[in-house]
Image (cartoon, helix red, strand yellow):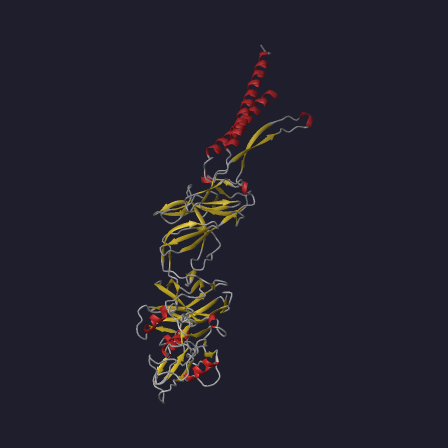
Length: 611
């Protein structure tokens, strides 16, 4: 009986090796199949029952398939935006259509699982892989970005439409120059707010500072009566009036002498020195006329002196106090001769409170002054509730400067354009109503929060409503800039017009992102992954899909693997390993045939005994 058992065992060996060869051939054939998981062969010996170990024989063999589903394939880049690969544990949930009715797939409701991620969008907006399986996932609300459920469904993105979203917030980041270079600053007198790049409310018929804010002080001034030795009351000053000279010329009784000097203190202070001849810069000849002295003082204060009826009035042109100090006794006498006080210098006149309370608006009449005394703050396209685009223009105006001395700090106001066609007293620009104050280190010190609210924004009749102006910590600064203009780092908003879906792509986080005709990229769905406790006990189906079995256990939503977009997982087949197995299988198969040949020869010998 042993010889015949050997024959049967060898036949079993041939069958087992044939089974192994079939698996090897299948693995080699699918070496380039996306997401393919090779099938190995497990050999199991079949030992016949024996009463004692001493009579036990080797027995036969059978072969079983051994899955390698948990073995990762190589991930490579793909040019298709909807392709995806799984790095690590996990499966895509898919369904296969049981039929198609009116070009619409009908599903049986049975969910299968695959790692084949070569999905592409079909005419119906479904994502289908190369084996015909439809991708499942959880849809995402396009406005909130939150999942609309937790049970995966077959995804479809046909004719997706998103309604318009009104702008409610503007994100802003910029650097404002310490010294803005405005058209007005290049012509303004030194030491004035305008020269420092600021805005002078006195240049406006309607005070553009925030609504209800106190009007800036009016400019300080000094008034004096001209005294001469010719007539009483004093004759009006003319261009021929001398600073010094002898009667009966129209001159002062006591003039300035060479070496005299006076200081005009409007922060910063400037000294005027008198010389015999050849005056340059802030010098005057003692033979110059009164008009030359007044012009020199006006250039320093930034406001022209006025002369009327023998009266001289000097102005600062700003809200600063005006102080004139004589630095020599003779200069003191000369100032008194001009009628500016007979007492001991300095001559000081404090600024007075203004009467033009802030309206927070720039009218059409004041557009030129506003443009000349402010700098651009950038622009952004915002959207109203109907999705109508609105060009929101911004400008910055410096309302105070630390360079003006004690009591001053770098302060800015932000304006937005409410009308592009305003004329006369119509409002063209609106002050948002917040003082942006910066410290000496260029950091924003006020407001302290990260956002302000701009109420009732409207541009050319298009209402945007209240807008939140967001400035993150450190996003708005005031550092020196050679250009003297605002450097806009970020200016974005959260609104958009209505749009139609143009294309979809899958990101590395498994989110399906739709690109719409309005330029928006909106999250549409979340691709879910599932895993199994007994992964290698799944039943393989055609097309790289797997079916749940009792040994695999049910699918568990969620997996440790990560989805990589625009990528594909290749086959985990190792050609070199398969070729090695092929050689071993061939040799084993041949060896079994040799056993059969040998057993057959032995049987023939046994039969020959009977002859």
